[in-house]
Each structure stands twice: as C-alpha cells, then as structure tokens.
Length: 120
Image (cartoon, rainbow, N blue to C red):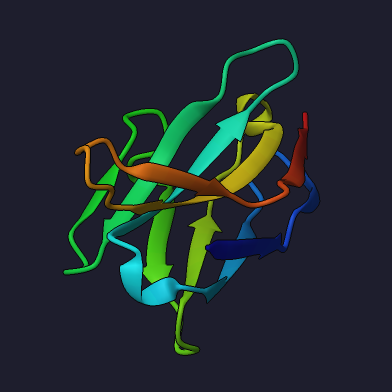
C-alpha cells in the first residue's frame, strides 16, 4: 500500500506561479513512476507530467515549458512547479503513483487532490 498526500494548491492570478508537493509513504520501494493529473470541473481527469524511477520526465503538451516536475530532497516526495499559470489550468490536481502488478497493468494510487484556481 502507498499513501499520497498533496499540498500547495491555492488561488493565483494569471501569469503567477504555484508549487505543488506530494509526499508518498508506505510501500514506496515498489513505486515505478509518480505523476500529476488534474481534473477541471465537468471534465475528465487528464495527465499532466510524469517522473520515473530513473528520473526520466515527460509532460503533456498543454503544460510543456511552463510546468516542472522534480523529485524533492526529502525521500519519496515529488514537486510540480507551475509557472505562467493560465485560467485553463484551474483544476483539482492529483498526485499519482504507479506500482507493478503480476498481470502487467500497473496499479494506481491517488492522493486526495489539491485545488488550483487561476483567476483572469
């Protein structure tokens, strides 16, 4: 079992910055990748950025060049630095961790989510 706790959401004006953090606990040695997803009101949850155990990183096109995902100095933490925020970035942001399973499809763990609101 893996537990994920996010922090750092809030209200910011267009063009501002926020930094989200995610702390993982429990069976963290089994985690292959950690990622951030977001879900705007009335929309489906979408993937934002991912960092793997070997620290390879990929971003969704919508945030490339503005968001930075990184591992924290504290063990089992991941940050999402969000710069040049836009109103369309408004969403609940979720931390995700994937662990391997015997049947191939990874198992997803989710945090409780943190609200990010960007005012125009």
